[in-house]
Length: 444
Image 1: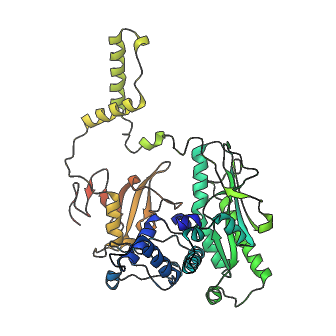
Image 2: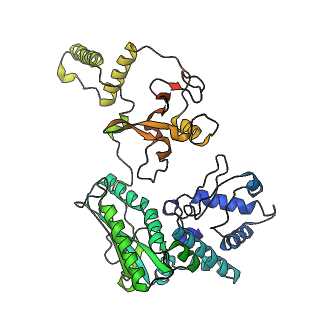
Image 3: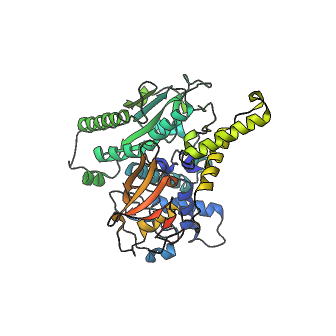
């Protein structure tokens, strides 16, 4: 509730999500006696993470097992580390950036200070957190987005893609202007005076509050210059925004200037609307994607002339039995697909095999099990592209995160191939599995 009210929640933006909070709380709860109550847990939580050194320390969900975990951290890429419970141990806060971690740390410290001084929970959460966020910064980055295409699914794709790029912007800002801390308010905002309750399309903006970095030594280590003037910092900041904006406009997959407007501006607090509120916009289809015909492509059998002719003959027979074409009702698309699959299955010899292990299981084994003779760089994944057919990608380049632009669901994986000899060690179509020995395969 505290992080949500304070605008410090949202894993896709580099903040903490519910799962991360559960692990952080678990790590604290295991140190408390059984008689500890919820207020004790909250107090210890805020005290611990207000003093936590995120650059140095790692959060182990089960602290007693910390000595058994050998995790090599890359500080330049992992400003925050919250490890998973099960092996292989991985960092679950992979979207965290230096800016988001600094904002979280400040939030924990402020909350702990208020609590220590006898403040109530209402004081900790704030009367109007959004207003306090705006009043607490003199300058902002304003990310405007307006979509007027009318297609809800496309609009959601544009907004989702834009939000997925926020982490990249935060990383670039730190690399370009480490003297500045950029804190994102993780919700789309609007000007209350111009907001339309019945708007058909989203028209709002995101705000990044800008403040001076507390850790000047860290800023100097990241920057190749020991000190820069305000004018130089401002020029670097604007240059970063223009570069990022150009990258957004260059993405032909999501950005279309005929129905989308995106801009990045550096603005002062006085340039913001008088009353900024959270965008109340609701998609007209209530966020429910319509069914797409393409979703059935994977399970749809290829065209078979014999099966099509059988379907046509069955159609003629039904029409003849009815006595008239007027009484005949054309079978639906789903019925035609089932009939085609049944006709093909009748002419295709059955391959008896046990259930095939999933492509996700194979991926995890190849990526994280170091006992094999071939390194993970020695494999490629063959996957089904909707427009170009089967394509290949190195195993190590596969993106599992839904928020990633290059995300491909595992149900599109066709095979895993070993590069040294070109053998398909797992194949969905032939049911070969040389990794686990399921299907018709043998153990690797």
